[in-house]
Length: 378
Image 1: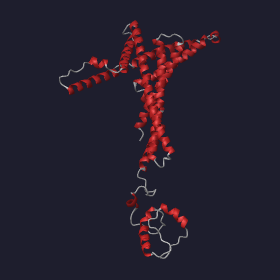
Image 2 (image 1 turned 90 degrees about the vertical axis):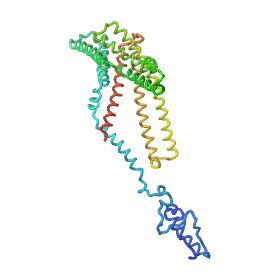
Image 3 (image 1 turned 135 degrees about the vertical axis):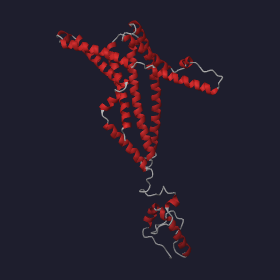
Image 4 (image 1 turned 180 degrees about the vertical axis):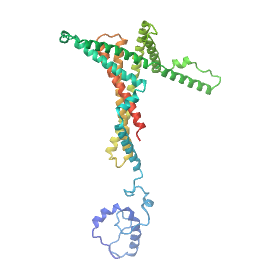
């Protein structure tokens, strides 16, 4: 072989780089040709980075030469794809389950709990108060006052007023013994402190319950005081305790509610700041990946995880904002009772009470709907 000619040299030079699987067989042949054709007019460098293609197949597999994954054909490099398809199937199953969930089923599960009944009754109660508020406003105008009011309307107003009082008492009865939850937390902390002191030294005396009670967190103590005050006020509503005592205890219950609402607003703000920071980190990672052209095709797992994490943080931030608005409504409502404000008290408390009831019911509805979806997703 005195010379080697390439009819399409330019084409082979650019296209041969995509076939590394034949490079080993080409090296063997080109070395032999190079050794036997020293007088040829043109000689190939066997170490060339772009050798021509050869029709022969290599006896050495690409996995042995290159490590397997980088040059594996597309139809074979699907080791991680079932995991991605499983995540997509989970998302589709969750979406289908969300569509199949009926509102009646969610309300049924929600009304099984005392908290759900409380919020449902609160919506009905303050909707009636809103109707009475508009009715009073229209009745006080001159045009409506000149006309004679029908008798059935007066009877309807009295029924609504009676129903509002009954709903209020029913809601008070539903939240009886709410102070057991914070008391259980304090008792659990006291038992843990006793076990720690017993394990450290037998000579060390265990701390009394009063020490644990005084060192409990302020939100827990406020919740305990608020629950006890509400129960005493409820006892006065049903006639077991004097009315004057009930009114005094109701004021302390409102003060505890006011302080606990302020504490919850602070905690809500701190929690939202943390969620916003996490959301910014995830968004910055997605932005950096997009600038580096690391799309979903090149890095599907990380892209998918970041997208899911961002969606989860956005949903969490949404409900944190809803909780903040609910706490603001509660703060406005209870401020009228604590500071004895009189101006537009009925109107403001009606609107804020109804708004707080709707927001609380929406959160409880979403929570029960999520539980149903998790139970019936597959």
